Length: 251
Image 1: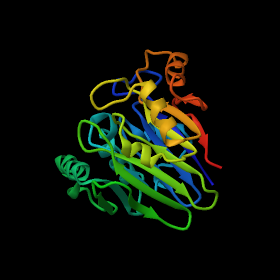
Image 2: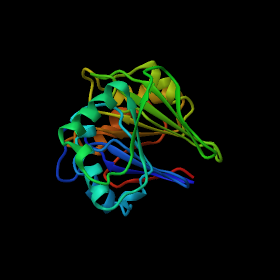
Image 3: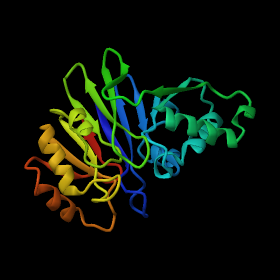
């Protein structure tokens, strides 16, 4: 049915073992890249994924540690002969800036470029963005330093629900998105403006009734055992710390 591959797990300060947080969702019909910092082509190749197999790109928000690799991603797709269109989803705030970033590279002059479809998402709760026979994607605005969306993926055949908070302070919109989810991947940067502590991640998971909590977007100088211990103070279910190239089975 599908799996999630963690292409990067760090907060905005990455290191030699942790790229900035971004994910890859593989299903029977779609290969969805969620954010694209750094050099996503290298990460995708290292994960054993063919670059031009990507069917969709979702940008959660317009911060460098989530979108800096977009120009290189599109350039390399073009150089490697991509012909299929690529839909890119994001809030209007994100999409308008992504277009401006690409315009700085004068990409309209790149000959024979494949079609890129920028799809703006309304900044409203529980918006249905994708729906086919396999998958339903619902988004809601979360509470970060600029407009940002969290993501809820519902698999229609087996009923599995996977939720990604993206960067956010604790907010009821994440609780709604994560309601009874099998997997919640929640940012764990720390208790600061626009972010969440590990204890707050646990509180959200408990309130939403999720089955498994995964911590991502964390400071890499904190040991995984410490991150888990802090989240365990507020959540009694299984807790995992995401690491680069971790695979999460959705079957």
